[in-house]
Length: 78
Image 1 (tube, rainbow, N blue to C red):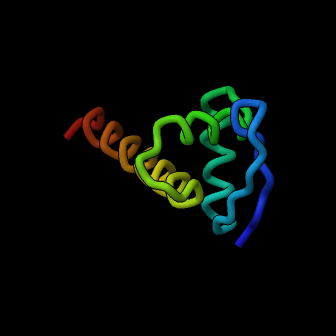
Image 2 (image 1 turned 90 degrees about the vertical axis):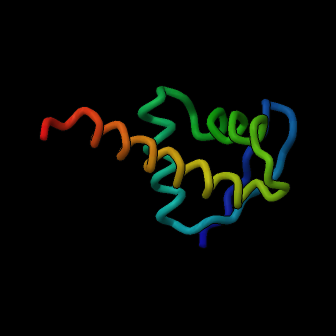
């Protein structure tokens, strides 16, 4: 588990604790979207329905890769 401090919307300090694999994936997603990890976490925070930010981050990462996989399957010729 990795615990990091984050600044939500450049004004609210908090921390999240997630597994290293999720942190790596989150950093990869942020880079792919050309944004900082804090900016991505702020975006996740704004749209989350789960009260726990760490859980919301995990769900976001999972859904991101599920959607990416679905897109790849749709564009692959049979």
